[in-house]
Structures are given as structure tokens and as C-alpha cells.
Length: 249
Image (cartoon, rainbow, N blue to C red; front, side, top):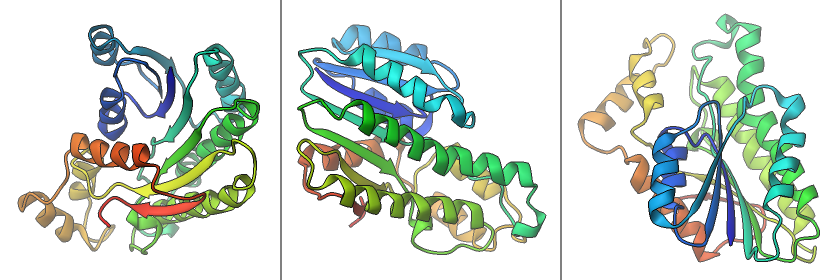
């Protein structure tokens, strides 16, 4: 059995990743604020095992215990591999940072950065004795490597996720059955986040027109196409500890 834990599995890219993983021999656990009946139905038809766990990633105090409980339940003798995909994320607050409410900044950092760090920490700690291949794939963004006016929180959280990946990659690289850490930018995807971006004012996001043109010119990837590229990379094993990658390269 191959274990996959995917955050943000109820919609968008996370939902597409979870769907693609519903194959015989896979045990997929989706972490999100709401469950997906579609994934449960498809799992029953595909021969995969799917479980939905309702989690609020902004409530960071409980995340380590929740991950521990998930992994204790999944620890079976037939386990062949284990993977955590930290996909969930938010874009708000947008606009000049001086106009951003403090509670929105805190919520953003909890979901985009603190939650993946805590989940990764718990995953590594609770699988340390598992003598199987283990991977953490953090879903990053080009915004973590290039600054955008109006996206300071988002750029900062994704840059932090990339550097966290590099650091833990160094920690794990020489350990027996160490966890392989990678951070991957999935490209520009046609999700609800993109709809929100196109609705922003030019004052809050000066590059709004570029993203409108990407949509009009059909240059946005579908969640399914992006999921295929991410899982192709994951399955290839063509990466090292702490690699920062982009599916477009």
C-alpha cells in the first residue's frame, strides 16, 4: 500500500491530485475543511482507499496531534511508501501591506507556512522508524521566487516554504530512510484563486491585466494537467533532498 496525505483535497489542485492518486494499492487521505463525496465514490470504483479528514489548517495547535493520529492508523506492515503533499494555500490579504488587517496576515501565514511546517515536522517524526521511501512535496509558487506588488504575504509565505524545504532537505539527506523534501511550483492554474486575482483592482494588484490575458489566451493549466505534471515528477524520483523545482522547466 502506498500512503498519500494531501492537504486542500476538497477543491482545485488538491482535489485533482487526490483524484489522480485513486489507483489500486493507494491509500489517499484528504485533509480539508470539508469532505468530498466525489472522491469517496471514485475511490470505491477504482479500488483505491480514500479517507477524508476535516481539518482547519489555521488552528495550528492541533495539527501535530492530528497528523500523528493519521499516521498511527496508516502504519501497516504492507506499507510500501509514504508521501505528504502540502498543497493547501490562500492568497489574501492582497494589496499594499499597510492596508492588510493583522488578523488576515496571521491567518495567511498559519495556513500557507506554519501549517506545512508543523505537518512536515509531525510526518517526519512519526515515520522515522518506517523503512520505506518517504517524500514531502510542498506546493510552492513562482511568487516565492519573484516579487509581486500587492502579494507581499503570499510571496513571503511561499519563499519561506521554499527555504524550509532546503533546510529540512539538508537535515534528512544522510539519514537512513530520510524523507526527501521538494518544493514545486505548479504553474498558473485555472482555479478559484485565479478568478479572485482577475477580480482585484489594479491599485491592489498592478499585474492584474497580465493574468486576464493568460485566461483569455488559454494559457492557464487545468488542475488536472497540473496534477499530472506534479505526480509525474513525484513518481520519477528525479530530484534530490531539498530541491526547488518548477513543472514548467
